[in-house]
Amino acid sequence: MAPIRVSQLLITAIGCYTSPEFALAFKMTAKPLDLSRFDRRVYTPHPTPIEPMPKLSAALGGSVNLWIKRDDMLGLTGGGNKTRKLEYVMADAIKQGADTIITCGAVQSNHCRLTLSACNKEGLSCCLVLEERVPGSYKPEASGNNYLFKLLGAEEMVTVGLGEAPAAVEKMAEKLRAQGRNVYCIPGGASNEIGATGYVACAQEIQKQMIEGGLTFDAMVCASGSGGTHAGIVAGFHDTEMGVTGISTRQPKDHQTKHIHSLAQKTCQYILGDPTVELPEESVLVLDEYVGPGYSLPTEGMEEAVTMFGRLEGILLDPVYTGKAAAGLIDLVRKGHFAEGSNVLFLHTGGAPSLYHYQPIDMSENKKAEEKKCD
Image (cartoon, rainbow, N blue to C red; front, side):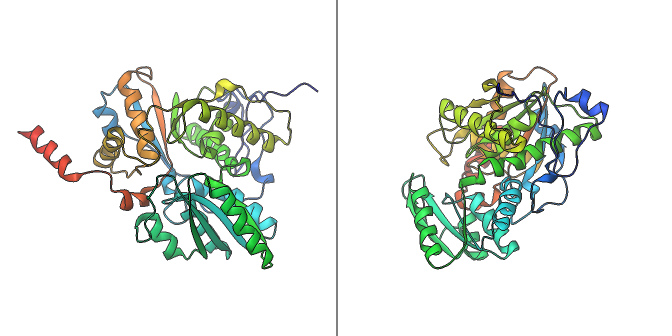
């Protein structure tokens, strides 16, 4: 049998939309699917809002209309994109009878925070492997997410060096299984095809909001890290006119592009139940100009973006993911990347708790700059 090319994944966690208007709006050429056939734990029983950002748009010249999808307002402790992914991953863990969850992430991992929160809600034990992606970055007394790991009651936390997390997770799992525990391991960021399904559902949620609100978006910008969010959005919007740009927060462009394409294709195959499905490589666009000196390390663009979003729109970004993704968004607008009059949607994936650890913005310098501007 010849490989099938995905023409459209029109999928929702809350229903399947088959009206003529819906099909016309999104060029539906394949039978829409219904995610209700997949097990899901509901951690956010309502859509997250889509809001305009008029002051930010005006500050950038007013040639592009900027909007924001507020996934920082998702459920669980502090919200953020991992909540959508965990709805499907935790459902799979419970289906398999797990009593203990092990996952991994960076020392200020939003994913670890939200996995621990989900485990508390489900009555499961949770163990964390924290990876020092920047040498010396782990501080036992640190605030931010590290404080929340302790507050939420992680059963065990171990810290390892860069690239050592997978082996450490397996070692911990072997130890706990030897004790008779039923262990389920979640990859970093919950970024496998099960987790990415949550962002296929998000794409459908956005499509429904566009139709109901009379909105049109020409492009979307999101952070591209462990990949589940970016890949799920790519799969969910494939073959619509929505161009999705992922701003890498860690990896070089070529590496991240291959990773996102592979995961997006696996997600399509998982949802359709067909391993022959192919996703066009041109569906994935990654930019790596905004990573700076490395993962979680500050850049001037990130500091500007965090400050502008906070002071113009009252929205908190984090310095590791959304801050750098927003720096990319701002730079692209300034460069004229988007056509004049375009409506551009920025996906806010949360992460604000890490601000209280990194505190990347020197407010004294910002104050001096503002005073100088007023003189």
